[in-house]
Length: 237
Image 1 (tube, rainbow, N blue to C red):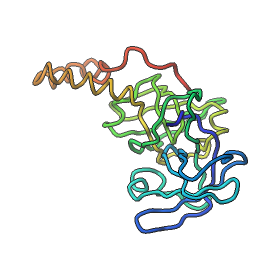
Image 2 (image 1 turned 120 degrees about the vertical axis):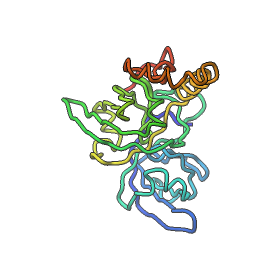
Image 3 (image 1 turned 90 degrees about the vertical axis):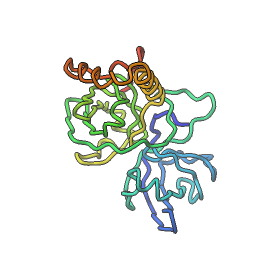
Image 4 (image 1 turned 180 degrees about the vertical axis):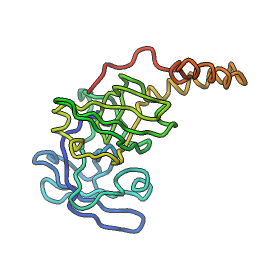
């Protein structure tokens, strides 16, 4: 498990193509890899990877399967690429963000960047199957970083996150550009709640569901809004 609090930025120093996978070598900031062992888990841009070999005191190798390469941004990495990294949380560790599994649900894409004073705002397009689980002031993991969705337009298929200077300092978000893809992991409790409520509505209302959806749409609402958890976690920016 991870907390979504990025602990630093690593650099890709080697990529080795192997049958069915790619071996990825990362160089970390001094101290990040202290005590790291083969078999340990590290979130790389939000993707849970297993250490397969240790190099110098501040480097480690990971095997990335073809499916992970195809479904995440890891397939686009090149030597010199920079990635967000977080080591697996220890028992009793403070959860400063929200619990993450490191299993990416899909890709988002930056469609707009704004830079108000001391902030950087990313508008991220997301597929309808995932944006239904994103709510304003709710948690969302972007490239392994626990963030709060500030605004959501489910009809247009996007959400926004505001990034404070400390987040920009500790991550690669300051380097992202419009059009870049991002790894997205939705918040699991929200997903379970939304799916449970929708299944209950479908079961009870059956053929009336399409009519209800049309009525809600005319009012600028949706079934997903009705399924929103009554109390979301406190926001994180």
